[in-house]
Amino acid sequence: MYDMPDEIDVQADGSLRIITLNRPDALNAVNHDLHVGLARLWPQLSADRGARAAVLTGAGKAFSAGGDFAYLAELAKDDELRAQTIADGREIVLGMARCRVPVVSAVNGPAVGLGCSLVSLSDIVYIGEKAYLADPHVQVGLVAADGGPVTWPLHTSLLLAKEYAITGARITAERAREMGLANHVVADPLAEALACAKRISEQPQQAVEATKRLLNLHLERAVLATLDFAMSAEHQSFTTDDFQSNIARLTAKK
Image (spheres, rainbow, N blue to C red):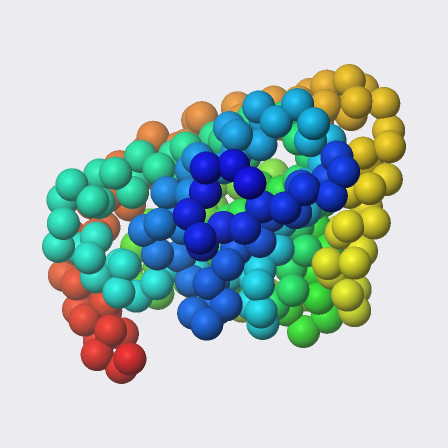
């Protein structure tokens, strides 16, 4: 469903759309095709007039392990690919912020890097008891342009946003709930997210969508205030010695 690569599976269940990040053997790590697909996904979901709510989850054991190290190594060497990726990252953030359809995340396992960003841009979040969030961009020498620093200050305190963005430390499921980065810690996040999405789909459509838009105007305003600087800074960080040496070390381990 939709014009998506194999790395993103979209299924219809009545007025629900079930979106699955689909690289289970790689823990749904983000490669080029998955990244491009995510940039294209949200406008297509908004344009799908039969869609009333969506669930976002990951295939297998993880929600998403973040950027695929091989892909990151390519970005360090290829200026054109890097420019496209930065532009697509901007579209992912704005596309989710402006998406007409309410998105409920079912965080079935680790949500790292861009995976963590997708969670923070969702409308309601159910996280598994053993799952966790993390935005370790800084640990590899990157600015998290499409990551936690863009949206976390709207979910939690600025001090906590700084702590986890600057250190890249893991945020356990219960800690995420306490901080306001998740709504519910549950045993079966997919089942709970589907039930929630179904309840949303049964509410009056115009009221739901206009209310989401009203709330997300706060999000979009914050995103637009920071996104261009963030994207420029991330583009620059791909060329630093710190990133180059870190990604060489990480890819050598595989």
